[in-house]
Amino acid sequence: MAIPRFWREIRQRYKGIGVECKNCGEIYFPPRDICPECRRESYKKMEDYELKGTGEVVTYTKVHEPHPEFKDLSPYVMAIIEMDEGVRLTGHLVDVDYEQVERGMKVEASMRKLGEESPEGLIYYGYKFWPLDTHGKD
Amino acid sequence: MKAKNEVGIKGYAGYVPKYRVTPEEIGDVWGKDGKTMGKGLRVESKSVPSPDEDVVTISTQAAKWAMRRADIKGEDLEAIYVGSESHPYAVKPTATIVAASLAASPHMTAADYEFACKAGTAAFQTCMGLVSSGMIENGMAIGADTSQGAPGDALEYTAAAGGAAYVIGSDDLLAKIEETISYTTDTPDFWRREGEKYPQHGGRFTGKPAYFKHIMNCTEKMLERTGKEPEDYDYAVFHQPNGKFPVKAAKKLGFSKEQLEPGLLVTHIGNTYSGAVPLGLAATLDQAEPGDNILVTSYGSGAGSDSFDIMVTDNIEKMKDSEVPTVEEVISNKEFISYSVYAKFRKKIEGGR
Image 1 (cartoon, rainbow over the protein chains, first blue to last red):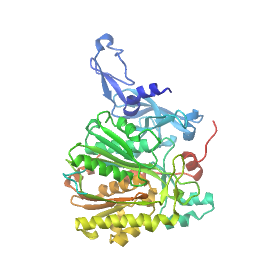
Image 2 (image 1 turned 30 degrees about the vertical axis):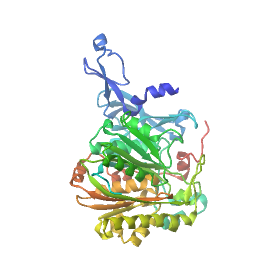
Image 3 (image 1 turned 135 degrees about the vertical axis):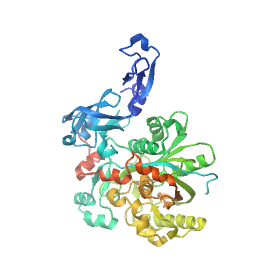
Image 4 (image 1 turned 90 degrees about the vertical axis):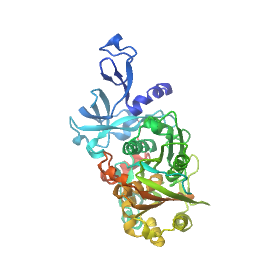
């Protein structure tokens, strides 16, 4: 990933900052410039919105043939999470066994290393998810 | 060093990675009686970070929880200092990444500290100075590490990962920091040269002229300054490179095992270096009652100690309903791994692509 691209997305990756359409109230993540529902009505009405960071598992899978970047984590669990605000994100589920995961499981975002450019290069950080019942007070 | 104006802790939290490896498992690989070594060190297991965890992620998690407890937002933080001997970058601050992850940037100051195991308490003192002088309202002091011992070295049995974060301010305090004092000398007991992966140490030299001399002198000076006796304190937290040193130091100073107990985490998670004293204090605050007096003394090789006299306020009661997990709850979520998995997690072995 090029440095400027990673840098541009830091707010989204670290803090889960999306946008809220002040015309219809819909939340979008990643951020969009225009609300696809309200179109030009939403012009200049898209404001920053920070996701609370909690949501639940919609569906999930176990990855045995990892991307080389994630080989030390293999096998790992990827999931689609529906955040409390309704937006859906794809992310790693960490600190959890595949057998423990179930649809509807409450999860919370936590910052982890997503990868690195190279051993000498930039480290990429961003959100992954962990179960709320073992990592917080549900 | 007495603060000019009231200063103390508004929020705190500790985070420790979930994975554990036992001394027995490590000893098996290197032909040592790990079980006996563990008993000697009084360490039953040490924490191991997942491959996607480092000082940035540990600090961020602890800080996020500490802010939730303090009920403040990122923009309320005017300073962030992260103390560690395992910052992910040699050049590029951990603190800027943590600040961005807390939405504290850009109108704030940030820096990384390094002072072996006492870098976290050095961050406390800086925040105390800034708050009590009135320069800032709220500062974040973090101590975190993902320490490494060379494979087969004595340090490998204890070098662990974890950290804790503190919001330091002047109002709504959970605990007042009444006084701090330091004891600093040039003592070459432990070091890591630029570009080296693993540290070197002076073996038994790390004991008497290093750990004990600094902890004892610093704590004794604190007792002299406050005019208190060890029994006047409800709890004491000392740096814990293993389970033996803090207990011995406490005994010599006149503190009881009971005073140490809540903050003595090394037995379960190993030596979390810059995270050790901040985590021990966090676990102690989890159990503290209003009016409790806590004495804290850190130790960092190289060498120095920082002592703090901390008085718990009525606000600590509010923490009992907090949504943030206690240190005990965080630590109880654990999974034991083999030496091979630990070696992979810590990049002691590399897989092919």
